Length: 90
Ligand SMILES: [Zn+2]
Image 1 (cartoon, rainbow, N blue to C red):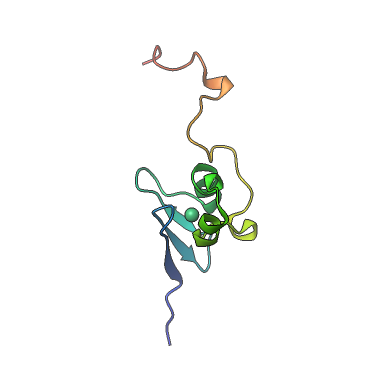
Image 2: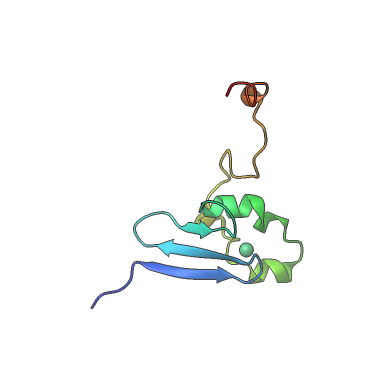
């Protein structure tokens, strides 16, 4: 019997789909841009949920599943070392 190693979950609240992979880390399918990690989804969306009702409906509230937030998980901010280096050098 073959069981698919990937399960797709959908967070109705965040309007996002998560591929739960058995043998690698989960993949979040953002509506735009590249796929990311659960911690990225948390940093960008899920942490802003306010009510307990919302939190209960979100599938990405479990710290043990999403992991801690990593650098770069939030929306792109200009890192200090990148300032002044863009545009002019093309
Ligand atoms: Zn969510």
